[in-house]
Image (cartoon, rainbow, N blue to C red):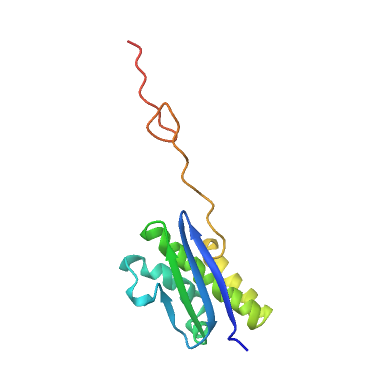
Length: 142
């Protein structure tokens, strides 16, 4: 039989991260490189958040590989953290038990709802008569 695995995704603006979570030995990789090498360094802790909230022992028996594309650096970081959080919840729901899944879900939502629920805000399109979506060109009376 094949190894137990789930695939989830995280989104932020135009960035999409796909997380493949399977039984393993605690390895988490983003685009083939370990979490410790994710740039920018300041936002690296954003990726660690789901791991620190639910505890490292929950990730000890799973391998997570994340592919991320689109968007900018910050959007990609937020997409990655959402994909990791959703992956661990989906894995526990499918292969462990419902009680521990609910426990994980509750802990993640209490910390930050965007870890499991996508942020639906998008860039508003530009309109005529101004230089942006809402700004208008200056009006002159004489």
